[in-house]
Length: 114
Image (cartoon, rainbow, N blue to C red):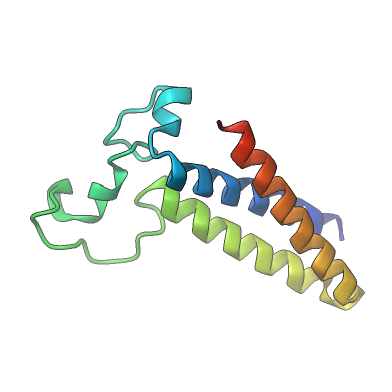
């Protein structure tokens, strides 16, 4: 049960980061000084293309580790599913509680990154 809660907390924080980045792509440039073309920068989307050039073809393979938006989305989904699977034996109420905890932490993280 503790592992389910930890997974839900991390998933919520990851989702909140993802949503803040989506709303404000320069958030990590502003808060942490990352480069615009870096993994968490506002132009990280270009990393999906050969030579980081949108005029070139899309790179082969999954986008999971190419930028922070894809990574935090994948991480949040995997951890939330794992938390809920671990909690299923305890009842549906706990599964809903974990999802609510995830949503609360996502909201808090989103606000904290303003």
